[in-house]
Image (cartoon, rainbow, N blue to C red; front, side, top):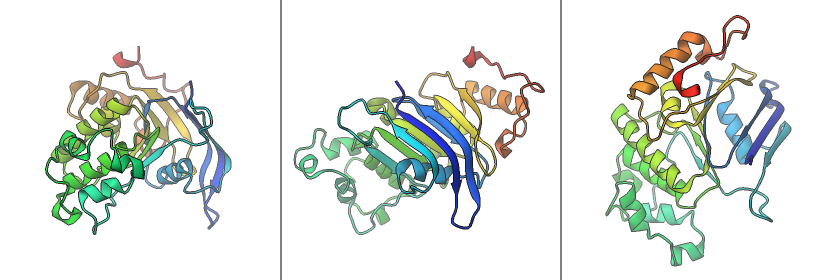
Length: 263
């Protein structure tokens, strides 16, 4: 069953610049989809359109709910910065997204959630008292405790050092496998996409469209350092040298890539 269908004929900015044109794809329930494209290709714009934060487009974005009467999915959005409220404690930042009844009678106590993400005893701390990695853990938890149907992630780990980012990618995979939302994860890093996603959509330069859609049939959890990830990364760029610049040779010039995890 398809969960999300995106069919954007055109998205034009107020200044007349066309950001997206003829971009279409579908996502399945519980699928982790990475979106990779060059700077300025409209990746953040695409997430904003899917989230409903921007409704000015020529085309359609359709959700296919499995629950009768549900018109739109429960959506979480993790931005490039954690965006925690600095005047609220960790607990208050988390409670901010919960319905009143969930705060009063939580299925899983917040202390248990905090322990799960490696932050036991941190509920009374304020964001300014946390490291960047700890703030990211709170931001991840804030997105997952509402059990979203759809989780949108816009380059959420770009400002972290490599060891911290690796730790939080593993945490993300653990949380995702527990609740299985559909994830759309924007990144500039092909290695990061390969370490996380079930599938990768590659976008062209602006105006963006999908130029390549590949499955990543590797077991979770993965890390950027995994040999299988490194081999697939090298294979893709060998087959499509300009892929990360948003360009791909016609199939008649370059045969479709074949690697072990796509057979």
